[in-house]
Image (cartoon, rainbow, N blue to C red; front, top):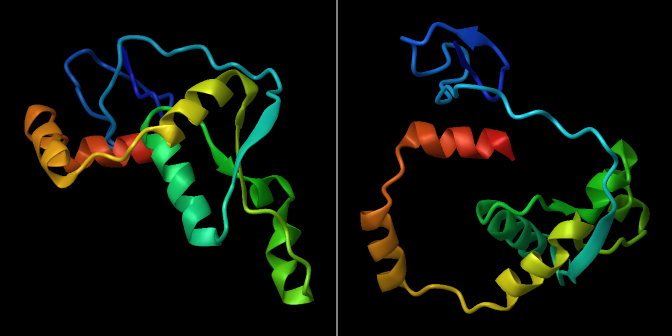
Length: 135
């Protein structure tokens, strides 16, 4: 049997994509780790856009990252309106901290390197959407 890694729905082996989300099916599901993680701040951004860019960069490299204010709960969005600033920190699980720091210190690829990578490893729209859903 095949499984959708997102929806956790079981399919016949003849099916290759999930009917609900379009993700590529896998032979078996990876057990989920529900143990609490310790997150550490690895970057303090000067603005929201930079913080979101850093999170996206880390996530695209497979590092689970999130914005610090996401850990404050639903009321965090009101803080700026109340005149209260909060750090625009980027958090990663402690076990990913060193990998995240190395990624952030690396120089960004130029246009030629990006074009070459795209030619060598093309990604379909469905694959890109499935990767985003994984984050």
